[in-house]
Image 1 (spheres, rainbow, N blue to C red):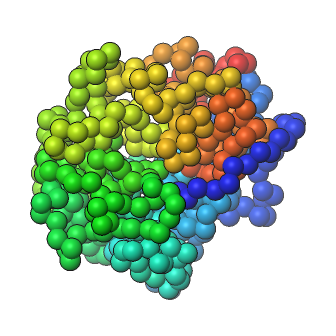
Image 2: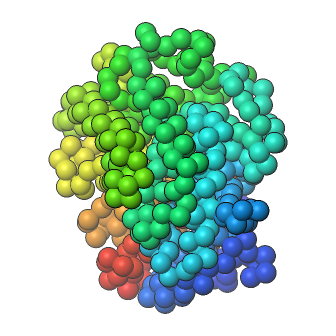
Length: 464
């Protein structure tokens, strides 16, 4: 996600709908519209209900480009919002809240199938790229980056979680629908490329060669936008984990074994193995995915747990296999805070609880408290800029009602009068925010409200 200028907009907030007119919406799902009405009608807090009505359908309203090709194969390209490109990670997260209503809406299922097809095609174009253009023949504004840029690629920052997001969408689509219609030979080729890439990036730096390994440099004043060490990043020693030169924020890692992304890989690879075995599509790839998951999981257990002087054993954010570790958390998902959300561990897990206490307090250099809210920031924007998605994930990974209610109150206060979530907002003034159109943040907020509606509706039954 490229940085954009910070906005300072204050809009008075009568609770009128902020969605585009019906004729201007990019994709319309009757099931989503029914869900909006059913959920909003149970939310006692008028402003919270208004936010849900605006945010939950924002991806469909504004970012989906759906078509059917000449072979009657659906194709879905989803922009991230104010950037005309599709991130593999963002596109999965943007549609994630709609998974639970897929069986009620064949048109929505077609949209998902189209996104699975498009993501798989993106992987075949370049498994190391994180973001793509709709036009396969177009050049990106980043075409002069010092890496193997190709037509159709918007940005080539290799992020392990991007490949995991492709697996997450496909596997959960199948688990929800039992539909295998999009899992064809080209899709299997993409899966093989994903497994090969994750395996290749298990190599330590002593195994890297200039001709066979991913390199990336950018001419930029921002250190997080490029890799040092001639485009290789800091050295790593083989551990069993897989390298991720960039974080989910699109910032360069300090130590390239990024723990949240490796944890996500464990979950997604196991889900992939289950899908491939259940469908009989490929026992070979199923077994390879399962073995790879076990290797990475064992390496996390050996190398990722660090003894903190205050919190005891916690998960590091990044390690290098040489004994160095980065103790922090970033707002972007996957994160340490989100480990139960991505399915890696239970909320009650003792190591996670210790890590959570670290992440949500002053020991984490990117946690901050302000006059309006408290939450996790990101080096991508800077300290003091709280990301609403971190507040939503805090609520989604909590079983404590007072904490969840506190998160809802902060989210209600952070939209700056616009009726939408943003990338980040200034800790003391929610009217100062970055990225006024950021569909991922809106989807995570919508997912939180939908989850509470289904699992703990009493929290929505009283005004905040």
